[in-house]
Length: 162
Length: 162
Image 1 (cartoon, each protein chain N blue to C red):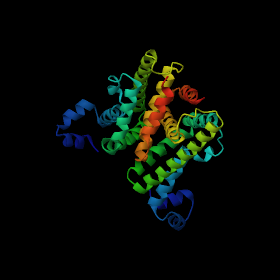
Image 2 (image 1 turned 30 degrees about the vertical axis):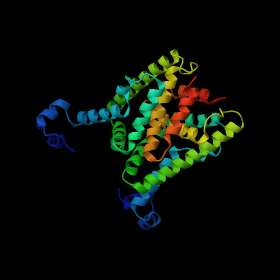
Image 3 (image 1 turned 45 degrees about the horizontal axis):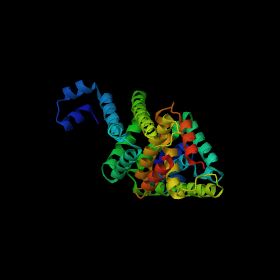
Image 4 (image 1 turned 120 degrees about the vertical axis):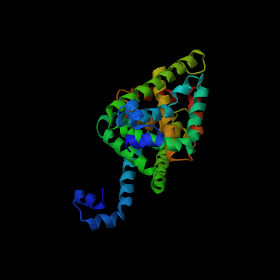
């Protein structure tokens, strides 16, 4: 696909698109990063105040898999593919992932202070684990639409509660 | 890539390759399934007797990410892409994943009977969670080579021990 085709599809003059994105590669990079941001619920994490709400958020993200998530997963796969070829894009995806984990770590710390989460676990390490659980379950749910992800989340909740 | 090119590369007569794989689609499907089997350590699970050994196995699989896993991940991404277009392939991948979870469930049950794993968790649900943790951590480690996956596994071990 050419920058010209993108401009035509968006109903914009070619010059405006070329100027804004400084070429096709930057346009692809921005599209890929927007996709990763949509897949990692970093923005929604700001409104999440408890582990229970986090698990609800992840459950909803996976529950949507019959609708927009299916489309998203196609774009996500293309994005991973693109990142394998473009180190600058890979680095920016790493940054988004790190920010997501940082927010998860903050949430874990807050829940521990409230006494609602086991306080014998390291918040940063648990954040890595939680991020992996969310994306791993999403990946497997995309492959198997009958996967009982609710049961897995329930187990996780049980393991983490004090 | 054509079936002819594959035959040439493998140093085989075109007829032999066409006959064995019944066309290019079947050849692609077999290559994709072999990749998924390599990514899910189903074969190695037979030799795994404890949760500690399972975590070691997952850790090794992720630790290899600077070598063959990097290549594998490229093929995995292509495989996910192909599965999005080929329902028969997607169904066979679902089957491999189900078999992997079944083996994980057997392991959980055995460890619970030995009293080495919390017995208040449902084995099938924990199997879904463990499979997701392994693949989620692998996915994130591929994006971020400095990710502290060992800390995450250590946390998981702590949460599961009786």
